Image (tube, rainbow, N blue to C red; front, side):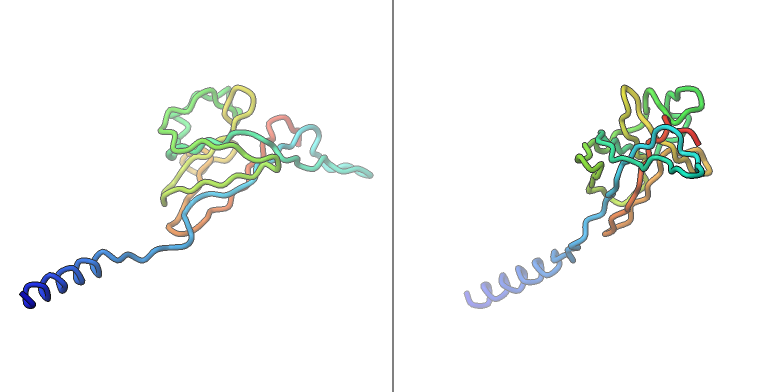
Length: 151
């Protein structure tokens, strides 16, 4: 009987030790701020361009999205539809800040402006609003909604 209990104890001990995983205290994801620039942003003698203002909106995080997978308004950074998988949707706070927990990977980040999606950054392969998330790291991004600004 003692030998059986000893064997059961050893088997349990081994199985528990094999299942122990290293737990990371830092979650992977994206954190950022959305601002809006409007009007004349050109440098002026004796004046200054308007400062960006916090923009309260909804942030949409999609799987990596190529320009071929959206319905774009002309050549603008405005899109009527995004035809890839929506990973997460969240609202910014009053200061335009947001944070999302995500698995490591490559994502496209859009924000809502009016009835459309906005993203003004592209990579060399015409992927839109690309953000790369690494394991155990928070990727910091800044989104500037500037389609109503002139430069």
